Length: 121
Image 1 (tube, rainbow, N blue to C red):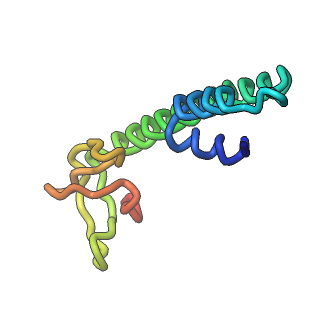
Image 2 (cartoon, rainbow, N blue to C red):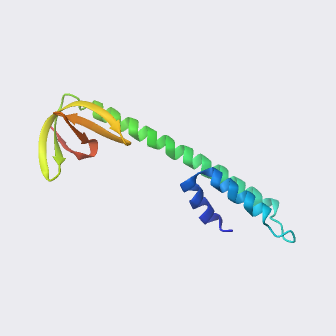
Image 3 (cartoon, helix red, strand yellow):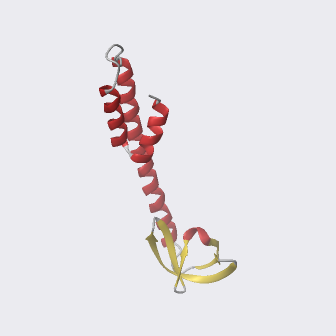
């Protein structure tokens, strides 16, 4: 069984998948050549590392979103230039919100994603 492929699948579907994969491997191993304790510990260590990496990644993602929200909040009342389709428009930021994990600014009644802001005037 390829650990790299299993780790990639685990990143996509979560640690539960990896644990089920490990259990299936143990149940279906050749009794004449069982998995060594070292191999099992290696796989368990990789599972723990995968879990810790996933938690750290989730934490960084939340921290980035909070930073973006704070940045957007600092723009309330400010004039900004933003892209809407192929147009460059100017307006005043009225409010900040999140939707679909995206920070959005309310500019003169129109929701604009934060990444569409081109200039703060």
